[in-house]
Length: 354
Image 1 (cartoon, one colour):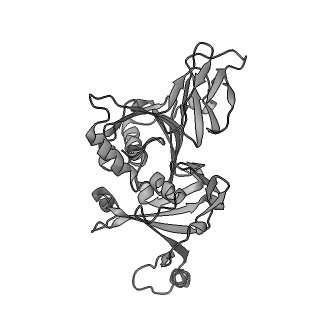
Image 2 (cartoon, rainbow, N blue to C red):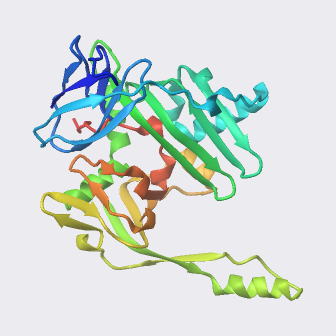
Image 3 (cartoon, rainbow, N blue to C red):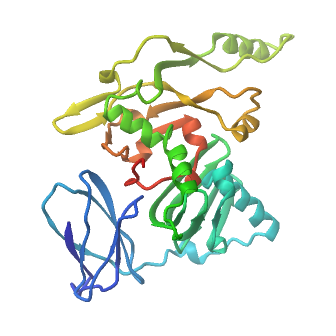
């Protein structure tokens, strides 16, 4: 694909960075503001970044034969950014450690991954809503020695709601291969394969290719409903009756032990595929056991197969691609193992098994 980047006065912007979100695919504009990118077939988010301008995000399809004219707007300083919430060093460190766990993860990969410019992070905790947010004016520079990548991560949104136990991370990422005498090293090749197999992108690609069983996945319908025993317990408490025994769970879940056909998970419209379902599905990946750190965090005694749960946000369609990417990510809700593995295990969308 080809295009040109201009400012608000239609003057070309030289040396703007143009890249495909979540990939190693990158270009810089020349003195005339022009750029060229060689893209595999598929749909992508194109990111354009230049000093003193707002970042620009454009959804593109590599099959569209278009010449793109992109106009960048001058950078605007949000008034909220000028209001500094003073926090102690101890509070900053506490928030930062929370951020690391939810952003990078807490497995072996995260232990070999670090944020170079961590001091650019700003934290704000709202005591009333019990929400922790993190921002960074500059892209986070991440060094991942486990997978062999340097990452520039533009943090769009990060918040943790302690009332709902819901955490959200949104951002765009540019990957650059680390340089070694033999790049990539055998260690990185092995680690990348381990990170990819069983990942959400591997799972999505398996659905796209109709290869779930062959790739080690078992999918079952998961039913969640309110527990009548909990309602009974709540009523007895309201009537001040004496209660014996444990508090029953508010929600009960059970699996439907039937094979799930592909047309229960997705629809096909021409060359496009979309996840399209209601409720929840349980995903078991049978080719890899749970990480020991995962067992500790979830108070599990024995390592079983990796187990995750997926649902669609408000039943919205989710477009899936052959490479395992999907749009828009916020419309897919993941729980369990898929949600436990974080940025430290993230691979470029153009990654391919060796």
